[in-house]
Length: 255
Ligand code: FPP
Image (tube, rainbow, N blue to C red; front, top):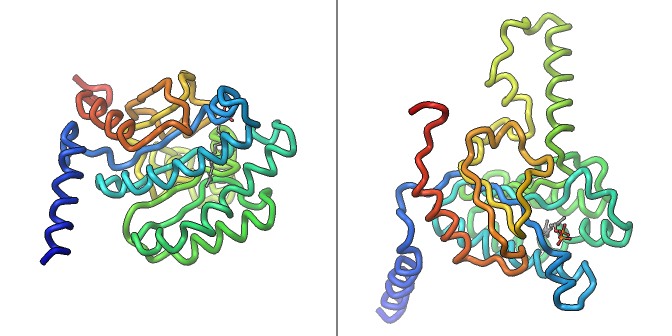
């Protein structure tokens, strides 16, 4: 009885916390450019990697909240194809984070029915990163809850070049004609083939650009930018972003 009462109380309090948003119109796919880790660390007089470590801790909170709100897909830009240009120590650190995160969180993700997915070129990643991500994908492949899509060694232009090459090969081999190429053909050749496009794109840290992230897929997404640095981003910021999204009229070019 007591247990039931406390469960009920926590449902009520989470509803109260989410009172700014309408349960029905929650964005089904949210994509986040997690930016500002370096500046966060600098402001605190810490090395940049401390910002990345703090940023990793935020992921957990946001996954839980997104799941609680009924978001179906959460895509997180964790490492871009351009991030290799950073100092080796920082790159090495960043590429250890997926393993560190998954070592700790995989059992909870499994319990929560989360399906881990990767978007990016896995072959160029260090073996330990590949192992951790592959294990997580395998162990969650039959899960039917939130899809947690990590963009890791991901770049949208690279993705588009590969899609064009694959389509060209199919045309060359005669299995497709040029006239068959339409939006759905392009979408099916991207790394998001079986995912719907993001409904909402969030970028933290005050930068107003896409940085080679899902250029095709965000054609009709709503954008929400915040000055909050990623390590300071929390559940209430996510709720705020969704509340703003719900006030927008999505017209897809219509009236
Ligand atoms: C951009 O901030 C952030 C990144 C390049 C890395 C984001 C990675 C995480 C938040 C953790 C990843 C964890 C897992 C589990 C995959 P920045 O360093 O460019 O910040 P700055 O613009 O302030 O310098």
